[in-house]
Every structure is written in C-alpha cells, then in structure tokens.
Amino acid sequence: MNENDTAHALSTSRTLWELLSRRADLTPGRPVLLQDDRVLTFGELRGRAERVAAGLYGMGVRPGTVVAWQLPTRVESVLLSFALARLGAVQSPVIPFYRDREVGFALRESKAEYFAVPGEWRGFDHTEMARRLGAKGVFEAYDRLPDGDPAVLPAPPSEGTSVRWIYWTSGTTSDPKGVLHTDRSLIAGGSCLAHALHLSASDVGSIAFPYAHIGGPDYMVMLLLYGFPAVLFEHFALPDALEGYRRHGVTVAGGSTAFYSMFLAAQREQPGTPVVPTLRLLAGGGAPKPPELYHRVVREMGVQLTHGYGMTEVPMITMGSPDDSAENLATTEGRPPEGMEIRIVDGSGRPVAYGVDGEVRLRGEAVCQGYLDPAQTAQAFDADGFLVTGDLGRLTEDGHLVLTGRLKDVIIRKGENISAKEIEDLLHRHPAVRDVAVVGLPDPERGERVCAVVERVPGGGELSLDDMTSYLRSEGLSVHKLPEQLEVVDALPRNDTLRKVLKYKLRERYA
Image 1: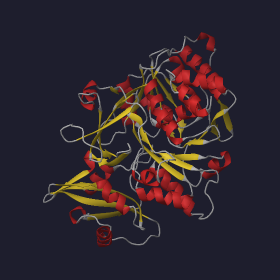
Image 2: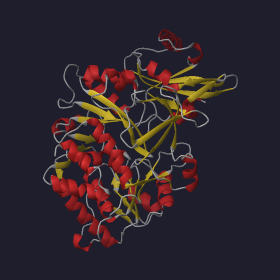
Image 3: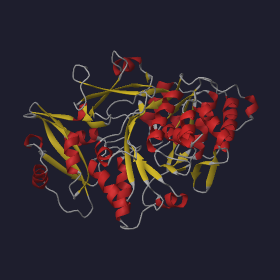
Image 4: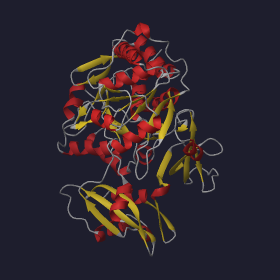
C-alpha cells in the first residue's frame, strides 16, 4: 500500500485516538513533533499521552468531563490534548493570548471542571488569572504533566460522533461563540488539508500558530495521515524563527495571509538567496489572499503557494492544490473535498448557477454540530441543514470556490453595493501598499462612505488620497466605488491567532 492509500485508509478512523494508534503501529519510530532540540516519535506520542491520561484519570477526569486548557504551542500541549482524547473527555482549548473577559466567558459557558494553564508565560500569570476568575480544578501544564500507570485507564472511546471539542470564535464587539465539534468533524477537516497538498513522509511541516486554534487538530490529522513531522514554534516572529525552519529543514510553512507576507518580507532582505533553502510550499487559510501576493511569493521566493478556506465552524472547506493552475491558485480558494457540499444562494436562499455570486452555505462531515447556545445553532443552519456562513462567493464550472467578501463587508453607498475585497485586491498591487483594509463608515449623505486603511511599505514613498484614486481609476475601478477617505497606519490591528485584520477596530477608530 502506497502513502496515499495508507492516508486515505487512516482517514476512516472513528476517533482521533484511533488515528494516532493506527499511525503509531505503522511507524512508531518516525518523528512527529520537533521543538528546539526535542524530538517526539509517533510511538512516543501515543505512549506518553497514555501516561498523561492515566495521571488525569487519577485527578478525577473521566469520559465526558469538560477540561479547558490555555496553553502555548508546545509538545506538552499536544500530549495533553491527546491524553484527553484517549479518555474521551470534552476539551475546550482557549487561545493563550486571551485574558479575563474571554477566558472567564469560556470557562462559564463550557462549565469546565478542570483548567490547564502554563503558569507565568511571556510575562503574564495565567495561574493567578485562573484563580481570579474562580476557575475549578486549575493545574499547570507547561513543562510537567500529570503522570500515571495506563493500566488504570478505561477503554478508549469507540465512536467519534459525540461532541468532545468546544472551540471559541474570536470575539469582536460581542462575546465569542462556543463551537461544538466531534472527532470525526476534525478528522474530516484535516483530511481535506492533507489530501489537497500532496505531501509525503519526506516532508517537514511547521505549526507557528497557536495550537489551541482550530488549525491545531487540522494540522495534527495531516501529520498522522501522512506520517511526517512538524516543527512547533511557541512564539513566531521573523527573522528570529528562521533558524528553526532552517535547522529542521522545513519544506512546508505558512498559516495565513499575514504569514506569507512576513516570509516575503524576510526574503526581500536577502534577494537571490532562499530564506529557507528546503522550503517548497507555503500553505494556509483563515483570511483573504490577494492574487498579487500569490504572484509575488512565487516570483520572489521560488516556492508554490496554496491557499484554502476554513473557519472555526468548519476547519477546512476548500484547499488549493499544487497541481492547480496558476490562475486558480491566485484567484480561488481551491476545491472542496469529497463529502463537502457548497451551495451558493441568492438573497432569498435559492441556489444560483455556476459563476453567479451569492452567499456561501455548507453541509458535510467537517461542519460543526452547532453552538453551545441552542438559539445560535437554530439561526446558523437553514432548512436543508446547510451552515449559513455570511461569506460571499461563487463556484466556477470546474468546482473552484471564489470568495468575494462577507455580507458585512459589502459597503452600501447611495444604494449601490460595493465589495471591499475588490478594492483591496487592486490596492495590493500598488508598490507603496504593504497591506490594506477597506471598510464602510457611516455617512449622513451616502449611507456609507468607502474608507481605505493602508499599511505602507517601509520606504515606499508617500501615498495621498488623490494618488490612490488615480491609481484605482487606472486599474479600471468604477468611479462610484472609489474610496473617499484614506488613512495611513504603521500597522493594521490584527488578532493573535492567524494575524487576521480586525476591521471592527478600524470602523470604531474612524467612524
């Protein structure tokens, strides 16, 4: 059986623990996690996770017990997560950068009975915060984990369709939502990523984003299916992290659009010399990808870039593949895997034809079970069981998905709909623009006015409103879509997970 056949066979695993066990049986001595000088093999991951599960069992954790954890991207975090999967506990990962408001909300809503924290991490005392919030069962899990004899453990879970994961959407102006996942939904999402990228056991990946993000199990499923390792980065910053990429011979890197831009900026510091000699592929998702960024990465870095579409509710929906055409890789989010249904609907909820824009709706095994709040679940699905995403896009005749924005990113100026993404994609081609976000601001005469907030390329020269509108006119943008306001900033506000631009902050700042 070749690697692809093995990966497809493993993707039928009912639970994450079964998937790990089957991989550990196949390649016990092959490395899976690399961090600094540490190496953990598939066999060691299974063996040590069982000992941690036994330690947790001795603390009182049982199948169905809700355990929250707020840990950085470390070997210990992966071990704890698989130990909880071995027990069949319900785990609620919390992004390590969240503070009292978000953490307190997650603990209350999930009714967590235990809470694993890193102690003092990067100058912040998580243990003190947990006590301040009145969290139950607080324990530190940074470099030491509970330990015990696996002989005490009950049988591992035998089915993967029960809710055992509560992930949290990033709160903006409202509280986060608790998203309910099963082992099977996470395996289905990770399988989409793995099969699209055409990876092999000779590859070396990287996890440079918070492991507590929905992308954490997505990536681990890929490693388990294809049997290759990933380098873990507890804190990602370039150029400091480059030494780790080079030392471990990383072949596949990325995370999101912001990560591509950071690698490209590092490459521009040493033109003509590959920034990571072994790197052949950048891949990710989580935020829109301007077509021009794709072309710049391929041209200047000499590597391929494949981008995908996912969200906390559906960890992987579509993914670009290295054998796609350059046009599709630049302008689409790739194709869905078998089993993922994408329906594009008009304002009345009726399906539209290929090539016609509408709202994106989803149905398939990778889709979440809903939210902790039943009222939110009722609003999230239509009568046919499709998840209502709020994203706008169209399907090409060959099945690729083109995203054109979000419903809330449609700016309505004097009754005309304007796509923020269309303007952003054009401005990304401007030599003085490093990044840009276009938002609609309240306007008493127009309803909304178009505002472009630009992060300028260092040393790229001045950029005025007249310069920008003249450029957009030359690119063929309709006059009624031209921005009426320009704001130039040193850095756009971003979240701490996939470095996604926080447009609500821009609306608040400039309204």
